[in-house]
Image (cartoon, rainbow, N blue to C red; front, top):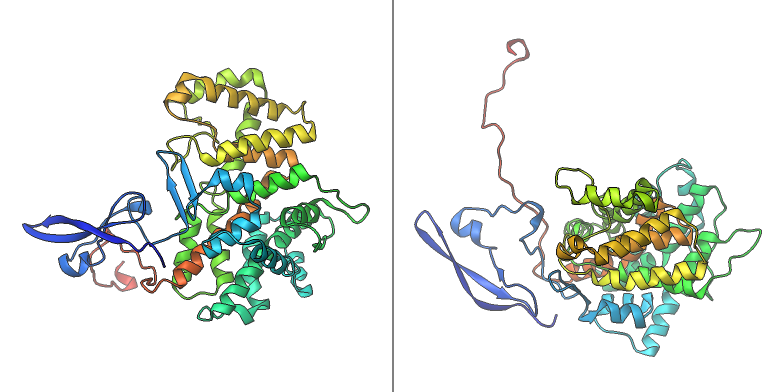
Amino acid sequence: MKNKVEAKGKAQLIIDGKTYDLPVLKGSVGPDVIDIRTLYRDAGVFTFDPGFTSTASCESQITYIDGDEGTLLYRGYPIDQLADNSSFLEVAYLLLHGELPSASELETFEYTITRHTMLHDQFDQFFRGYRRDAHPMAVMVGTVGALSAFYHDSTDISDPEARTIASHRMIAKMPTIAARAYKYSIGQPFISPRNELDYSSNFLRMCFAVPAEDYKVSKTLSRAMDKIFILHADHEQNASTSTVRLAGSSGANPFACISSGIASLWGPAHGGANEAALSMLAEIGSVDKIPEYIRKAKDKNDPFRLMGFGHRVYKNYDPRAKVMRETCHQVLGELGITNDPLLDVAMELERIALEDEYFVEKKLYPNIDFYSGITLRAMGFPTEMFTVLFALARTVGWIAQWTEMIEDPSQKIGRPRQIFTGDNERDYLPLNQR
């Protein structure tokens, strides 16, 4: 690993009159970190940090976020530069290997991923075991975990070659699984991948082609899909990534770890934000009702909240939203959508949020979930598929983070502590005395 953490100085903690010296560490960029690894051993106390919002759980060289400045870097590269110039598989290579590939390296990587897109023939039986109205994310959690039963030859996490093969298999097969989850939910037959198509075009075809006629892939829509995948590929130590790392710290196989990440992502507070944004647009219903909802959003006593605006991490404009906004308008222009009431509401809300003093002052800018929800809906995806597409893209980041954790000699099994507030020890009472 390069750019190892450096000791910058020390912080002093005084407990009951006794002073403890704690190392202060400095990364390559970002806030300094107080190293508390020996705190319990030396002082007999824990730290309390619900949600781990002030705790660094690992050392990483993959993704960096500066929420105040609105910065997102993959391996040092700004997200907008990658989205404008790279393909998703080129970004995937960067996340996995730390450097952008040469032309020959990219060609080999693309060939490898493309030749792993097929699923074992028996695997399709899993889908038919679900009800047709099952949520596609429920299908994803189960089927991705089941990959370990079919590809157990690549579950030895101590073998670097096995880890690489498992990584390639998941990146390659995730679009096929996601497309099958969609096709199954609408009662259409599965469409097999085609080796002559690029990653995003292949996925769109598997989702929207039917046996009666093939699907002609639009370059604009394929490029938009590629950008969506790039923008969602990784986002530092969020809930699902932390879940993957925590599961992986126990030595679980990579397929199980990625499945655990999908389960975490399924939560509406994490991966379901673009669904929530569209639900809000549907609730508003028409442009003439927007002023009423703007008043509700500004009223502190009203429970209504504008979904798809602002971000927990970004206190400035979400850098991904800038790219997604342009992509969204390109897709709407390509599809010639001019009479969709929901999209009319979205465009007017966008205009207000970028101009209204209240939103600008509070930095409640439209975020990536706002634009991606509109874009995916326009492309033909139902809202229940949005988080599936998020999982598809984030698989690359999860794998990169999982691999980094496995190869980190300082990594230990995750074991958070607690403040116990339950009953003290008490004696058991026989049933007839209770």
